Amino acid sequence: MALNPEQVAFVVLTLPNEELVLQRRHGHTHFENCLGFYGGGIEVGESPLEALQRELTEETDLQPSELQLKSLDRFVLEVSPRRVLEFHAFIGRVSVHNFIDTDGGSPENYSLNELNKRTDLTPGSRAMLDRLNERNTQWH
Image 1 (cartoon, rainbow, N blue to C red):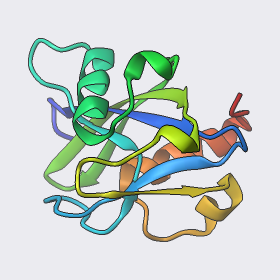
Image 2: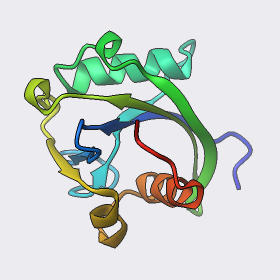
Image 3: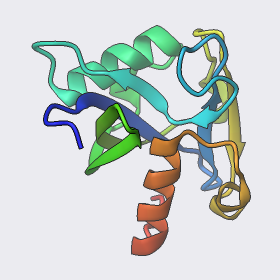
Image 4: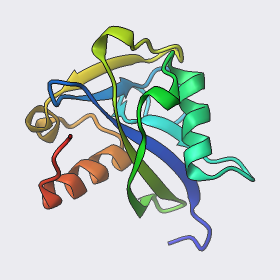
């Protein structure tokens, strides 16, 4: 693995019915047309939470303060021989009625069981789901 992994922050968004909201990625360099959790790279000088709040503001019409974001996990993943990412994961709840993707992607919601069967997830999103399944994490 690389000595300096790229830093990434993302959020596991949950709906009141316990479904998870992911973004169908369009126009992205990495993992085009895959499903991934909302978030992105951490810029120099940003904390993971600050980066996530910036990304949510750039990618959605959500106000991060409304989501009651909580730290969920942190892990490192080698996504290719030349690319290693360190993920900082958060969890937040969103209402389906106030959610709009403004980044050219499209939000899609699924139950955990449905997501476990999908083959079109980004590597980081797949790894996060696997970690959540191992822990039997509840979404509330």
